Amino acid sequence: MPMLVLLAGTSQKSAHATSLAAVILIASVGAATYAADGEVSFGLAALIATGSLVGAPLGARMMSGMSESALKIIFGCILLTMGGWLVWS
Amino acid sequence: MELTPLLIAALILLGFIVGLMSAMFGVGGGVLMVPFIVLVLGESQHLAEGTSLLVVVPTAVAGVAAHHKRGYVSFRTATAIAVPGVVGAFLGARWALAIDPAALQTAFGIFTVVVAIRILVDGVKTRRAEKVRTSAG
Picture 1 (cartoon, one colour):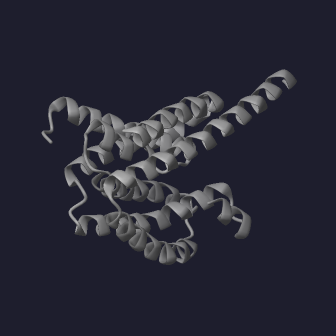
Picture 2 (tube, chains in turn brown, purple):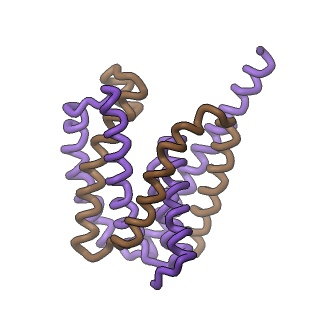
């Protein structure tokens, strides 16, 4: 996405939307490749996707009213814990 | 794995947080979904990655549909990115499937830590900028 803004001179919003469109195809092929080896749980995916479809528009709306730095720091700490846990377990 | 009502609620909540965080920080949901599926549900790293990729598809379709209405999507540019991306996705998935799940889990953990550090550094920078703005205003 930063490459799209720099090279194609598109706006941040347009770059985000366009890269998201490319992600549809890229993720589909990735998922199909894993599914061919039986490494996809369709039931889990359906449940997580249900929550995600509700969460994404709310997230976009909530962005305006919250402290960006606090959210980034909290999210970073959660990821750091999960990453460390994955490495050590 | 048995899907109890509690687990179903936890999975929908996870999806909600993934959607929220993806929209807010522009990160892929995989960094949240994969650790949850591996650490909490006890599934393999391969199944976690395949399932998380599948979740991305409907979420991205919904996002594109919303942006398309406002005229933000350039399908020509998207195709230009997607063609090499699709080849990379196929090769990357085949490569990942050939790697031992435990080794892949460690590699994914290191990747998650790197993403976390990037977000934390960005968060500290944003905090400084917010303080400057507050004191200036």
